[in-house]
Amino acid sequence: MDGCFANFSSHHVDVAHGSVFARVGGRGPALLLLHGFPQTHLMWHAVVDVVAQRHTVVAADLPGYGLSVVEADPSQIAAHSKRAMARMLVDAMARWGFDRFDVAGHDRGARVAYRMALDHPEAVRRVAVMDIVPTGDAFAAMTSRSALALWPFIFLAQRHPFPEQVIGANPAAFVHHCLMDWSQVQELRDAFPDEVVAQYVDSLSRPGVAHAICQEYRAAATVDCELDDADRAQHRRIRQPLLALWSRGGVVDTMYGGLASWTKWAERPSGAAIDCGHFIPEEAPGETQRRLLEFFGAAHD
Picture 1 (cartoon, rainbow, N blue to C red):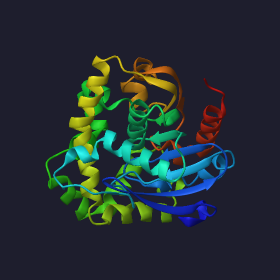
Picture 2: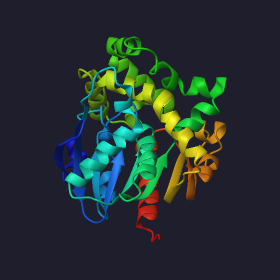
Picture 3: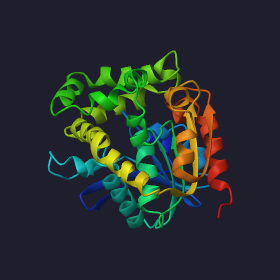
Picture 4: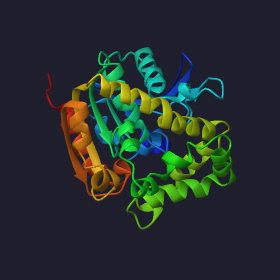
């Protein structure tokens, strides 16, 4: 959807273990935007123009998603861990001239964002996470109710190639179901323009993408939980200011207590519930813009 990124340039950079694609535009301090599943950087289409008036925005495809590639043995789950993905993105930002930056992520991108803040405090100034709790906490406190709501955590982590085959059989149905099931819209186009949805489907249909996504979910259920457990045992916390936003009445709100998890993980957390479904930047772009500009524009130590 080039119209929403009309003043952005496209960049593709090689890094260790793969390559990263992003759209870059705007002026001011650098802000890395990371999307969730089953999307690409296009999920920020309704937000970027306003945010780019005050920030140099880098809207990236997560490694393995969209046009970003993880080059690894297909059986290597650790190559798709949030630690590995964060390292690739930090390297890409440095290659583009941004050694220090802010980061905001939604869903899977938020998981990469908080891992990036933990592992690379020298690079990350501030971090915003949308509609998640830490991965280890999500699994540790999972109930039958939350497991049904968070079904991709279980299904996409199943042994190769079963989930890949299911996605590949009808990627359009898969994307449409996720967007409708987790949002509060009556019609897809109320928040997701036809051309954006078409590109989400096209991305999921591209050879290797479904497998990379499933590997990322397999890593979440194993490597990422182990990393979170190790950090918790060492009382390692996010030192940067952290903003958490979540869907009012959604899974994070009703099953995980909203900001409660982040008070245990971050030294300077803040947050709020947003009146929309899971896809906050697309369902509530005005509120998303306001919250991001307020948080990332504030003076912090």
